[in-house]
Length: 377
Ligand code: 9MR
Image 1 (cartoon, rainbow, N blue to C red):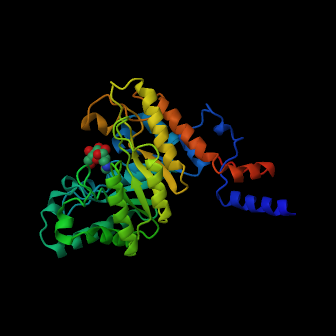
Image 2 (cartoon, rainbow, N blue to C red):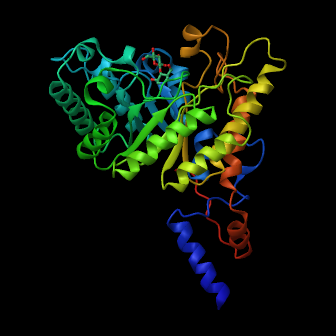
């Protein structure tokens, strides 16, 4: 009788997509299976994504075929940024962002909106930086978030509301920009309130880069706890993850500790911009990259609140690193010819491990003969 009740409970959990994820008998979970990252992420109950651009989808059929096959989540790399959507006060240009949302919808992908407000002063449109009246600036900011948030409500399921509010490498204080100068630190809280009002259904992220040191984490944690204490509607923290393999990765265990700390505040977490360039001088660099990338992914996915991982691109053929750092640092899981690299297999293994997680429940489910493996239709 007791076992039947437990079995019934587990069956309900399966139906509800609850904590029992996939039985180890699912063929995708066999090491070396040829299932896609998207299939593995579905089994693991998390999102796996890539940042992309319309020109790549339109100009490269191989790229356009692999992107939705391997990834269930899409982030517009540049097309939803303020400079792209609204280059001047009177002009909104939604075309390229709309194209990406339509591509995602046609392929059953979710969209991460990026980003309503980027704190980096050189990424703020000149016409916004030139404003010197606080009331006018607040009005422009509210209007931008309202217009963009409403336009994509129901089609974008998460927003990076505020991107990179802290200094990148210097002392971890709020970045100096026109918002901080004229509106004070409260500009961040106000942006979240405006985003919630514009799209009540979206998961609202604060997205931060280079959180690899204790000092930067402490500053981010203090900022987030302060926002929560004020009742600001922040749902999630995005840790970007542009880590140079072997050089500025978070120390072993530190990423998991950070993710757990945010989870303990009741927040979700995603790695939102993962890429791991690796220098040609690194011995066995493909393997070194795979080890690092697998570790980083595993540390996030070890925490239930880690709900997604997005790569910043997916093929070494097209990566911002080529122009920003140097060409040939091959940061992504597919090579320039779309072959899977060791990093791809490390990513697949990390997703498999998450899929077969929570062994106590799974063991019980297996004993009771319950199969809840979920495969993408
Ligand atoms: O990859 C993006 C690159 O193509 C753009 O030129 C650049 C400026 O808009 O932004 C890059 O993406 C950044 C992201 O939006 C925020 N985090 C850091 C990313 C890499 O710079």
